[in-house]
Image (cartoon, rainbow, N blue to C red):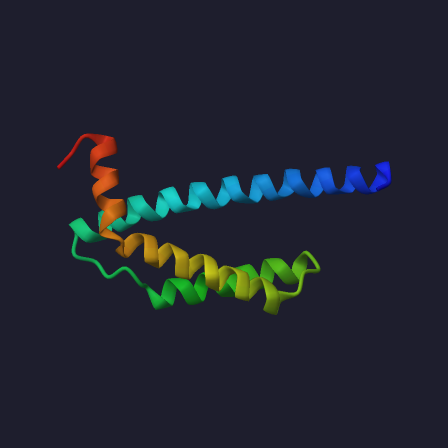
Length: 102
């Protein structure tokens, strides 16, 4: 394998790590907002907000010359994951134990 290909792959690996770190941060926020929503008897899913997020993301994708349909599918998966985390009582229990509340 050429050194040039190895350099490209290393750059991809670095970007993938950054994406994973950002998704981890987003998951943490999902846990926190899930706890807030649970405490305040709010619905996990806010369809209006999700529609707004997807519209904004598609606009940004188009401005950055990205395939907005593909980006929409990626963010639909991200939002689906966020809802799952917010609903997951296991995460809420772990969150309580991390912050020392019961």
